[in-house]
Image (cartoon, rainbow, N blue to C red; front, side, top):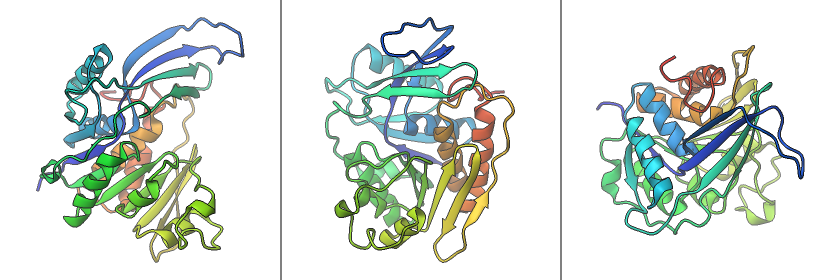
Length: 296
């Protein structure tokens, strides 16, 4: 079967401005660059996979209106197949405001994410037809759960982009094979966790492996190495190539997840997929935007 990735989760409209410094309270600054395009972890991951030669289908919520039209047009130009579960509704997609500091490439982001979007029902099982890997980002849980469960039933690997803990993520983790977490990821108060997950295991990755039927857990550390733990195996540290000139870190995590999921779709194991994802993400921060590296 030819490789194909299904991404399920958030799409936004990103309004990105490059500034000398993020403004202080009551301060106004003048940006020297403006970009308006689609964003969101699942959407950027899907576009990354397509750029790497793996067709991608995005299950998300876009809705109607001029912002939705901009997003839909951008996804189409990126070659991403879209399944819009909010099509025909009066829902409007979220807008993210991004400030990138010119000297460091660091970004500050404000977004409502999926707040305000209707609670989505799951797509039919046919959405998984032809798919060889699935990536979920924890948003739009009503869609992500049935997609992940159907993929797991068919033996298709499911990866999680774990940017942060979200309500209901514990249930979704029960359908995930590989959880790849950001450096900021943290479990909620143990009182809200399943007993197995809230046992006296201090290490985050060990707690996740103890609490859920995951095959592996990995965690990024910014410019530091990515730690990978496969069930029953010893921890492995995967190096990150030093980048001397960082232009923009926006979407680097989305690129990492999209690239590793593309490799999973091609049949690679998780360590090889992570190494590939790290390499592409390191390349991406040399360019502006989450997709500025494409074609370079």
